[in-house]
Length: 442
Image: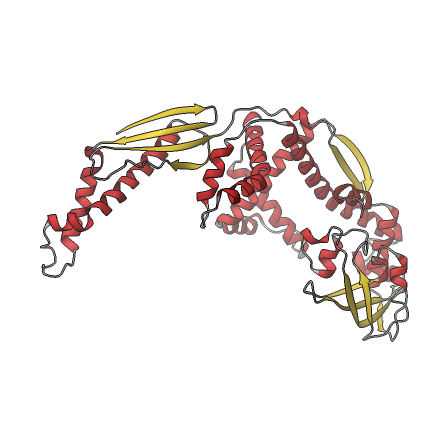
């Protein structure tokens, strides 16, 4: 057996594997002998079928299968030993002159090579890192929400400004039929809210979706339309009122404070707001971090230039899926996936340049922290190390969970690196301002 490599250019190469009869014949003969022992052919006793007949009937199929096994095994071994960083998988080249009648075979495999480049984190200069604060407006809204949660509810005949409405949004053409519950302050335009005042159970209010909510993404929640459809959606939907509920907020007294946080742990509205602010800003931090990661990613993809073996990858895409693609379909798929591929390569290069590694201890520690947070949400504030370790072991026995948690750990490592190395401007904003910066004004 002889394996050679020819470089077409910096991103494309061809590996040639030449097989002699001595490379494949022993295994082919071994398989055919097992066929002789087990073949069931009319006119012959089991185990007494002549080798010549077995070779005539099965010889080429066995030869092709064993040669293919030999090729795959040795091609993979060669790629590993040569430390070739390839994109996609090797593609066998068609040889119109090939015949199994020969005893010496030559097979060519096309390779798409990963490009050589370095990543300059300074290319992400100018990215904003948001610090989201819970402003007075949000805190007042949350206090009122909690007061209503503990308040006294009653059913009403007609809709008033502060009532909760339950009902169903429908639009036959778009297949929308979704139950929802909301208060009238959810709408962007006050005139929309006025259309509900005085309505009764069973009444239908027709609304236009364009600019219905402060953020178009809320259409995903209330109408269950897809993310691709929400931006600028301009259709009429009917809302059928099914119940009208009025809630009298709980009084801001010591009994209310004790219900929320336990006896003596809070004694004023300021105490409540302080707790809400701390919890909210802790949650906001994860959203801000995710946007920072995304924005750095976008900046690095836009400012880190390198070539890809595009023609090879399009050819590979034609054959990679369960169903073959046409050249036009592969072109479209490549255009759709190129940006993601570029970031995967950039991310891998960043990890190599900055020696970011994922260890099993990292994974165990992260999983344990996640489990402790989840247990705390259900009131288990101080679980034993033994209990947590047992759950960690069960979680990490699931390969899907391992992949998901590994991505989280590496995401944290990338985030910490970006915080340290990227020259980002820190900007303090309210949550509403953050939403506008993330999704744009609607």
